Structure formats: C-alpha cells, structure tokens
Length: 197
Picture 1 (spheres, rainbow, N blue to C red):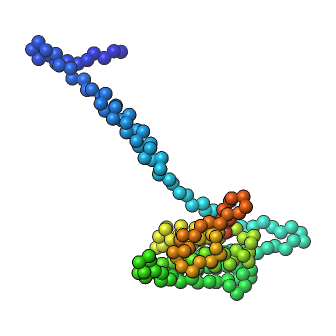
Picture 2 (cartoon, one colour):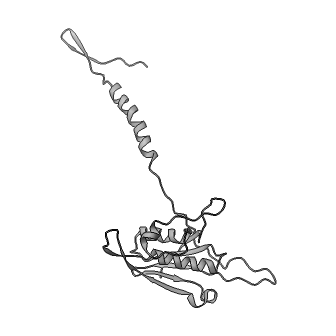
Picture 3 (cartoon, rainbow, N blue to C red):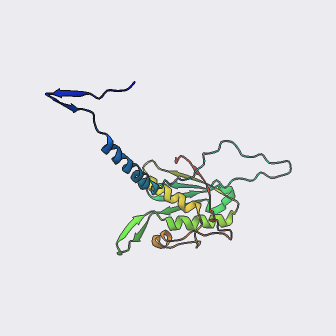
C-alpha cells in the first residue's frame, strides 16, 4: 500500500515532514567498509590444549610390556615452577624446582620474573631423554595470571634454535627451530591443563 507524504497546511504553503535519510545512509555506506578494514587486522590467537584423559591407557598386548607414562607436569606457583615426573620412569630427576630469578632490563635495572629460560632448558633436557613423549600437564595456583601460564605453555611446546638460554632477553628474542620440510620442531605439543593441589 502506497504511503502518502504527510503535510501541514500553513496558509497557502504546504511543508513536508518526511525525514531525509539519504545523508545518514551515505554515512553508513562509508562506515561499513572502514569498520571491516579496521577489524581485518585484529588477530585472535588461540592456545591449543587437551582435556585430561581418564583411564589407564591402552592395554598391553600379550607378551608386550606395559610402558609407564612419564606424566610430565609443570606446576606454576608464586615462587616459580615445579616440574614433576613419574619417579619410576625419570629416576633421580623426578622433582625439579625452578625459583623466580632476578633479571636486568635494557637499562640495567633489576627485576624479578619467572625463569622461563631455565624452564625451557630443563624441558629440552627431558625431551632428549624421552624423545617419544609428546604430552605435558600444566597446572597453576589460582592467583597466577594467564600471561604467565601462556608463556609457560609456549616454553613447553616449541623448540628454539638453541637447547638452552641463560638470560631472559636472549630467550625472548630466540627464533623457532624448523625441520628440513620447514615445519616447526615441537617439544611437547599436547598440553593438558591439570588442577594444582
């Protein structure tokens, strides 16, 4: 049904009261591409993790020995990192504590931070001993910030060019190591979140 324009009579002249939407529509047509262009550069990063598995694992075949899992676990506390492993598999190095450390910034001022270079170096040592191990459990106290947890996950997932780093600056600037096919070498790619007791 066609709409009649409304008009008011003022003497002999008629004045239209319709709203002119053309300027608003023009502005919206300009804003939409600008918003799309602005959000094109917004990148969402995801952190792949695995849910904890329940059960005893795959049963051994007749005549085959059941292999015990390493059960590699990193717990993050206010004091630093605590690395735990199955004692019957890892031996004497089953429990390792890495305390927070004092580093120096670019201006030489000291600051205390988690010792991510030592964590990475220790995980590389463990990987060299247990080459087939791909799973790492990561847990944290309730008051630990997500930034610290994410940095710990990064330290445990990807291999860097060197096997160990002494200071936070060289570790932070280190590049990933790649294989002959150009794929990133993985340390412990399957990250499982656990509850810290």
